[in-house]
Image (tube, rainbow, N blue to C red):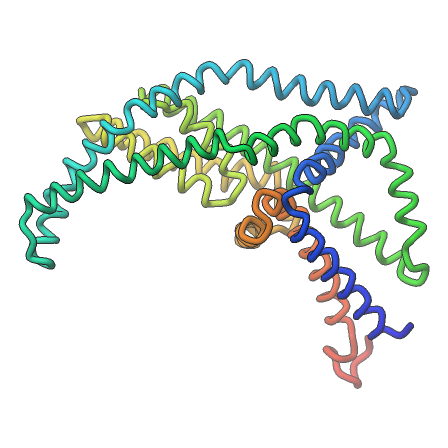
Length: 355
């Protein structure tokens, strides 16, 4: 098989895999989650195996520790978050009314000059449409929370994901060995090197970015709570965890916190303090946390991550969000490898220059 045929074969296999993912996107979510959990826990299982613990027992112990840790964290923060979410739902109409009252004079002035409508009619329209919008939002949230598909998806994640993760962890070395045997012998060494680079890139980014998100969540939650912002703990945790999406997470959290501060506080001091908390958080992220915990060695640019998450979410939904970063890491490594080959080729250097 010549080079062109091999290239066409790999492209056809990639297209077929993408088609299968798209067709089965509603079924593959718990399996993809299980693969990611197994990938994260495999180093821990390997350490336990080196201590002469059986692979099956090590996999079970790692999974139990992982899920118990997650449940413990949820039990610690769930009551506070639940109380803040309920309080936020009750106060949201009042916040909207304050915002409407603050913005209404400016909006009526603009509309009166542009459209020539009566300001009283504009005010009535704003009130009516605001009520309709919140009624629709409440219906949408209730449907999402009580829908059969949502419940089925949640149950599949709770019950299928641990089972998939356990069997993958137990048989991880055998699976890797079998896949290695299936590699084309001529390119096996090259493929191993690139897979190892993908693993290094993905592990470095995921581990470092997770630590960055946890540190930012602690900073934002503590800072906003000390300021006295309503739901500061909830907004801070959301802003920190959403920072996994570079720039976008902090931007959304900052806008939400600033909006709450504007409708809650009568003076500008606490509002400026909220801005200061997010400004310091961004300095910490850009100058301290990300350089030390993630670094430039992983080779995943923030814009590339944002693009991958948007494409994954738009094409495959939540499954696409789970797979976006691993696929982005793989594509990034392969593109850099192809670029190195191109720069070392006679096609780039020219026929007269030595390779």
